[in-house]
Length: 125
Image (tube, rainbow, N blue to C red):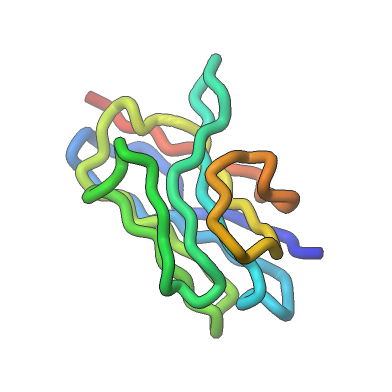
C-alpha cells in the first residue's frame, strides 16, 4: 500500500514552467513504477509520463515530448514532473500514480492501482 500526495500546481502563462512533485509514503518506494496522468474538464484521464523503479526508463505522450521531464529521487520517496514551454492545452488536474508492476511502463490508468488526489495546473494564453 502506498499513499501519494501531489504538489506544485498553479497558474502560469503560456511558455512558462512548473515542477510537480509527488511524495510517496511507501517504505519500498523504489519498487514502484510511477506515472503522471492528467484530466481536463469533460475529457478522459490521459497518460502524460512514466518512469520505472530505477529511473532508467521513461515514457512520454507525444504532445509533451521535449517539454516535460519525469524524474525520481528514491532516497526522498518523490517523483517529479518538470513542465516547460507550457501551453493552454496542458491545463488539467494532474495526478500521480503508482504500481508495483515493473515489466513495462503502463500508459493507461487501469495499470495503476494507487493514486494521489491531484493538483490543478492552469496555463493562460
